[in-house]
Amino acid sequence: MESTILVRVGGRDRPGITAGLMAVLAESNAHIHDVEQVLVRGRLSLDVLISVGEGQATVKDLLFYGWETGLNVEFDVVDEEPSEPLSRSVVTLIGATVGPEAFGAVAQAIAEGGGNIDRIVRLSRKPVTSYELAVTEGDLDVMRASLVDVAKAHQVDLAVQAEGINRRSKRLVMLDVDSTLIQDEMIELLAEAAGTGDEVKAITASAMAGEIDFETSLRERVRTLAGLGESAIADARDRMRLTPGARTFIATLKRIGMKVGIVSGGFTVFTDYLKSELGLDHAFANELEVEDGLLTGEVVGDIIDRERKADVLRIVASAERIPLEQTVAVGDGANDLDMLAAAGLGIAFNAKPVVQEAADTAVSVPYLDAILFFLGLSSSDIWN
Image 1: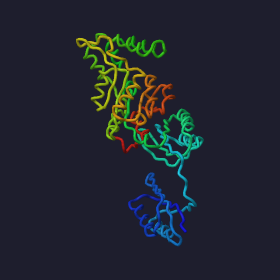
Image 2 (image 1 turned 30 degrees about the vertical axis):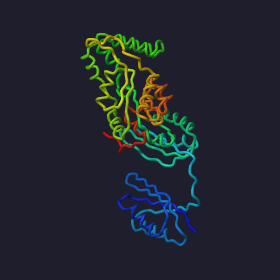
Image 3 (image 1 turned 120 degrees about the horizontal axis):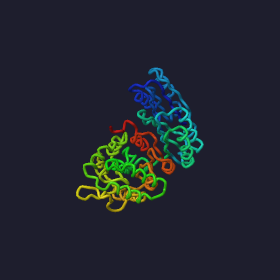
Image 4 (image 1 turned 90 degrees about the horizontal axis):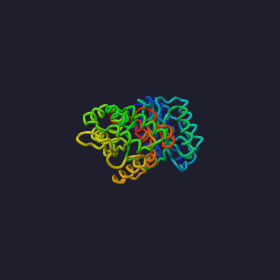
């Protein structure tokens, strides 16, 4: 008659521990069902689930191995094979720091949603702290709603995703530009060069108050730029500041074979430069009309607005033969809402409250590359 035993080995880590343990098990003709190992600050925790036949000296041999090597060896007899869980999900936790109060609140929210934490892995320590929690069972919607409250109360970022091929095989990221990929607003950079900054800000405020729609506000703001020359445009473009972590974020995505694009309600004089500078695969924005080297104050063609941004995501995904479930969209404003909703994962980056509430998850730390942790990457995967 066979017994199923969980062997737990703990102690200071060093080369050869796993090899030595397996040699003992091999000599005892033990059968391995599962192996998991965790290392925290040089301390090893190694669990091996085995089955052994009656009369085998496995336990005695393992105790001798522990005494000989200075390791702590414990045993738990497992009466029966556990059933496979019905569902699995992943909770990603990111914060400038993550204390016990925040961690406890996350765990409590998962438990209240019927989930059980199966494994916890630290993804990064600097410049942000992040963890990935593997969860079995639980209601995804209930957990998500509770975790939204936890994120607000403890100033951390949280995402809940169903485990599966779509989470682990994202292939396309589409980014908004103004206040997402860059720290600036393109129209304001151009208005400063044209000396119409106050006028443009007044029109923007009117649009934010709902007095005029996006297209009308954009066309009115662009008209204030009439007569601006190409050298002034280039100077405005040179003042553009990338968001911290932007280069690292894009370089890492490209390194792992993902397609990266930008879509903006801004202008091609900026986005074409960004595409070339950062090695992006796609770039879409509004085109400013130029005659004799000067802006006419008009926009060429259709305006890229909220609806058009979502259309661009679908067009690019189709052209790249990537299902929408395997796409990620990142943005900060109401203009991005349709795109965030259409993507497999919509991420609000330092966004307005209405966008944070509508997106699948939100990032409030000021580093664009923190998004990589929501894609399952760790700090060791990041390409600097």
